[in-house]
Image (cartoon, rainbow, N blue to C red):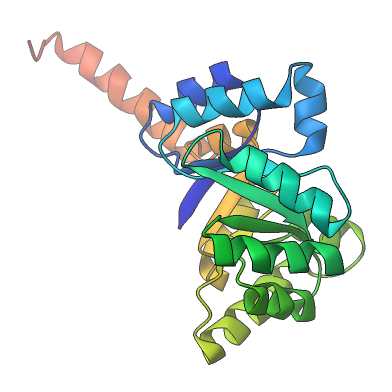
Length: 217
């Protein structure tokens, strides 16, 4: 499963990308607003920092506006993926982007029926929001399972990008459910490395090694 970082913090992104484990980046209007910087500048810096796909979201709500903004965003760098909302206008724009060879990430997906429409429109990625469904009282991970089954039934090329990930357990569950990718906050990415038994075991090993008085070098 590919792991994307959901962030606009270029410094944090570069630090975590140094692990070689970051496959791409997703952004949204909220993250852009928090950055306090011009969107086009931020996207350009992120695209220069990672080779993988970088999702940049349109702000327009009508098809014509989405197409204009999406083309502008796609012109920033070859790895830009234009992010559009899962609305009627958004899917019409998605279909046109597909014809133009522009990659898309259809966001704010909360049902398998929506995901089916996005795939039919030619979306490159579909972003089901797991955590928000959990908050709503539903079982978010069930949506990943349903979308996976539908896409496999019809050999759709659209990749499932699990979003609104809240913790490492969400990442594991998404991988087990067959998601192609997961986009996660930097804090959750950092937590993937950790387990208390790993830390405890390493502490014991280092203590025992120190007692030997040896040096490998």
